[in-house]
Figure 1 (cartoon, helix red, strand yellow):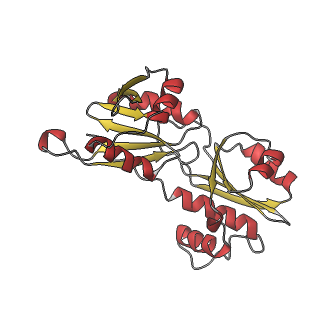
Figure 2: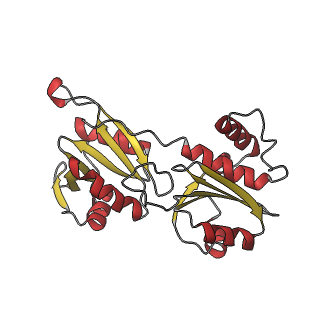
Figure 3: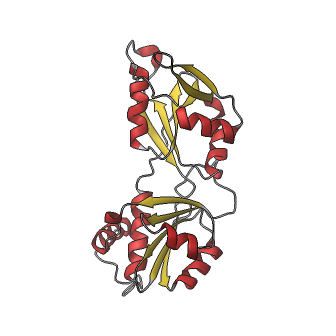
Amino acid sequence: MAKIAETPLMGQYIEMKKKHPDAVLLFRVGDFYETFSEDAITASEILGITLTRRANGKAAYVELAGFPHHALDSYLPKLVRAGKRVAICEQLEDPKLTKKLVKRGITELVTPGVNLNDNTLRPRENNFLAGIHVSKSSVGVAFLDLSTGEFLCAQGDKDYVDKLIANIAPKELLRMHGTRQFCEENISHKCSVFELEDWVYTSDAANERLVKHFGTASLKGFGVDGMHEAVVAAGVCCIISTLHSTPTSRI
């Protein structure tokens, strides 16, 4: 697979892709959302759209797959339900009003667990994001449904947490880098997984995020005293939820 040549347009694409390298980037070009390289291969397989190649420098090609912008509400749910994180990059100005490269920006990040898009949510079904924090003595877990505002946390041994996760059935699980083996061996529920660096998993950071989220001076009154792992897991869910941006109008 060839490296994408940095024409002005593709340079802009590369900058947008760097913001969410783990997500399928839907890059608005005129009346189409385009995907490139590995994203194009993924999109063509999940969406059943045509995969093509175009010239990309000397004797090189880049994969390309796209669909009309008005079909977004049909194709986006398929990507999310396939467990993919999707970043939507829109044109932020009318192409007819500028002679320069159209300004673009990521206006929405939709993931299986961080989702407020009515077209990708299933009616009468919770859409929980789960966070897990593992220590030597206990396992903490938290569940957040942005679409309803429900926010739950608990902690216990690995069997207890496994049963909770299986019963609640989150759409996405956040885990710390380095805990893959533990989760694969002890968490039976299968869903989309996203790994975060260990610096996110600190009690001070978790407390700060949660009191800000709830608008309180402390976590007293929530019944989480002594539940260190659960609080950290909840803090992780909270920080990820803030990365969700409210959709803007599409040009």
